Amino acid sequence: MRAASFARRLAADGYDLVLVARGGERLAGVATALAERHGVTVTPLVADLASEAGCTAVADRLGAEPPIDLLVNNAGRSLNTSFVRSTADREAGLLRLNVEAVLRLTLAALPGMVERRRGSVINVSSVAGFFAVMPGSTYPASKAWVTNFSQSVALSVRRHGVRVMALCPGYTRTEFHQRAGIDMSKTPNWLWLDADAVVRQGLRDLDRGKAVSVPNWKYKIAVTLGRHAPLGLLRRVARDTRGGERSD
Image (tube, rainbow, N blue to C red; front, top):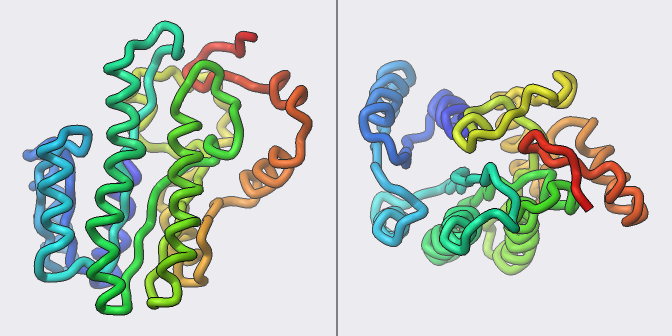
């Protein structure tokens, strides 16, 4: 999972960490291993960010002491069903995690960062947010929101010494698709990115002051071409990453 890649890299860089996940046993094991290996303080916080209680618990921690210098909003989900076969509850759940949690946690962290005149937020978005290329999926729309939200907020806080960035990777080898039940076996190997490499590039772009980071040259080219491609062409090449072909 990409969260583990962030945790390993930041612990190696000397950051004390607060790690959030739904699974308490696995989370505790990761926290202990990182603390022992890197000599940092790692605090596990069990919370489901798709729930009101979980989101509130993490937001409360972001406003407490000791202060958080870097927030990584990494949680997200997709659905292994098309929109017309979905339910309102499932779609609302996706938006609670992909959109509402990002909004609430960013808002919880930023006032303290602005007051201290330092701090950073990385909101993990996706290349999918630049195009409507997953027929019948609200996932790209949710990530388009994350990217635009991050850019807008970045403009409002940068004069206070605070950075906000949207990290927009392409296909990355994590547990994301497996957990959603999405068959990615037909996706060519050359499209896949390594999670650790994505994190390295993202942190490098954050240091450079970028508001949007698209790791890897092939996805940078895809975004540039896709932004200028005719809509008809995008419709012809659109493919459902859940394994099915496009449907008009």
